[in-house]
Amino acid sequence: MKTQQEEAAYAARVIRTFLDETCGSYDWDDFTSCSLRDLLIDSIRLRASDVDLPVDADGKRELLALADEAERIATGGGT
Image (spheres, rainbow, N blue to C red):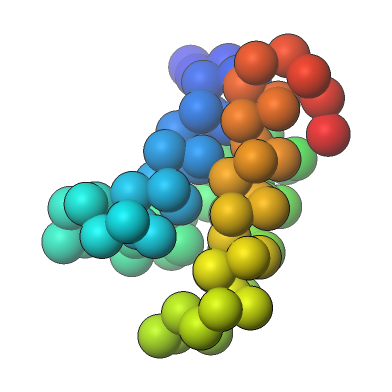
């Protein structure tokens, strides 16, 4: 089972690779469609999935903020 930090690192990685267009063809769909065990990280996933596509400047800022939030959790910095 993944730890909260591992799930947070996964969330941050998927969001960032989605934004820089280096994620795999199904990575974003898998991320937004499949619940995560940790409720805090899953809330990040749900907020990311609520961003309208295609991503505009506001959506990009929102996703970057979510990636930053996930990275803080992944590194033990909390929310």
